[in-house]
Amino acid sequence: MARLNRSAPVKVEPLIRPGDAGAGVLHFGLSAFHRAHQAVFTEDAIVRGGGDWAIVGVAPSSHAVLDALRAQEMLFSVLTVDGPDADARVVGVFDSVLHAGSEPGAVLRRLADPAIRVVTLTVTEKAYAPGSAVLDLIVRGLRLRETPLALVSCDNLHGNGSRLRGLVGDALDDPDIMALLSFPGTMVDRIVPATTPATLDRVESLVGARDEAAVAAEPFSQWVMQDDFAGGRPAWDLAGAVLTADTAPYELRKLRVLNGVHSALAYLGALAGAPTVDAALALPGCHAAMERFIASDIAPTLTELPVIPYGEQVLRRFANSALRYRTLQVAGDGSQKLPQRLLGTVADRRAAGAVPSYAALVLAAWIRFVGGRADDGTALPLDDPLAGSLRGASPSRALELLSPGLADDAPLRAEIDRWLRDLERHGAAGVLAAL
Ligand SMILES: NC(=O)c1ccc[n+]([C@@H]2O[C@H](COP(=O)([O-])OP(=O)(O)OC[C@H]3O[C@@H](n4cnc5c(N)ncnc54)[C@H](O)[C@@H]3O)[C@@H](O)[C@H]2O)c1
Ligand SMILES: O=P(O)(O)OC[C@@H](O)[C@@H](O)[C@H](O)[C@H](O)CO
Image (cartoon, rainbow, N blue to C red; front, side):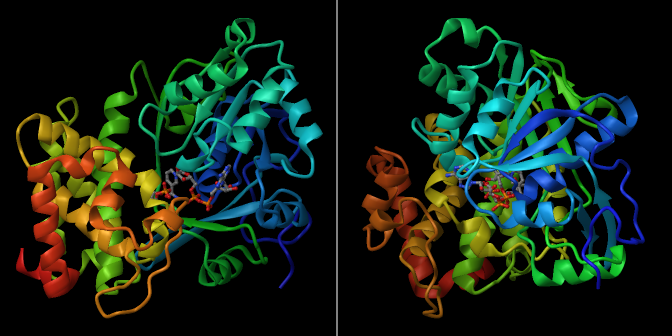
């Protein structure tokens, strides 16, 4: 079958074609999530509101997606999957792509280019640290900047806008340039697993061309953002994004409920041998356990938005059997993710004098997971920047690596130890079934 490109005969035409709109957004991280989320919102915004807002994508290190997009003249597909149903869309919103490692000069020129008025990022939690290569490159480019620009973190971090502002401000140390910049907070949400060969085959049959940059995603997609764009923005509101003064309540609810439960399913599921999130949720007792985790531990820490109906919706989304999100993918980088997703819940419940038992179970499952063996003895991979220290660490040391002082909380520690004994004795499936 022919490769997707601008002249390939396809069954699904893109809503816009590369070149129809000039470049206005520079995006770092050609992640699966970016392609299924911001790229789609931005294409819809251009269709409904016009403007030169096509995306220049920057790959921080890997060449794979960049090469595929270049081979396909910037076209790629998004497969929306819902149980047995699937629908494909071809997206033409990319203007061009650059490789940060081998084309840093071109990236710096784009960061200084007045046509670029928004920079977005999906660079994973671990890149938000002083000295990270991608932030260093961005700061080098910002030193050349003379016109207003918004920098928008689209990663799963609480207070992502202020976090990025702090890191950039410290590294830049230049109030005049900082005065040109804004850092709107955002809550981003669409479940987008890593692309598999089955995704590519399904896209091929629906689109009528081979697409090596395709992604699959659930139907649900949400983007809540603070309306603080120093250089203007695409008409994302016309594409369904929610513009609000304060994104914090949305971020907190999403991180603690959706991402917290996702990680719970990842660690418990991986220990029990469940390959995917939907399979973990289907383990006997698991759905009810997650409902209680949300109601008993998470909901009392969130007062501004309804939590229980949101949690029910999240569990329905996780049950989507077509997503096949691997538990091992969600389980990766736990040392970077759990502080965002779980430790706020733990801290708030401890401050209220309660011991969050389900959150303690998730911590125990993570400790057992980093130990490297599933309940049946199968080896588990550990993809984490702290892997070298975590492998072979005692429970106290693992908790200390996650957050200094966590292991010293005696009531919490007793609950984690109780779960560790239960997991050792009965396995994760046995523990869930008995809850
Ligand atoms: N997949 C989802 O369902 C989803 C949903 C909401 C938010 N997100 C956010 O998007 C991010 C990407 O997720 P994905 O599932 O698409 O993963 P992915 O593996 O497709 O993409 C990861 C991206 O991060 C970049 N990256 C990795 N390590 C980096 C580093 N140290 N410095 C700079 N860049 C780095 C990679 O180059 C790649 O572009 C997540 O970390 C998360 O914060 C993902
Ligand atoms: O993308 P990560 O690796 O930070 O986390 C894995 C998932 O929990 C996450 O991507 C969710 O699918 C997503 O946040 C849903 O919007």
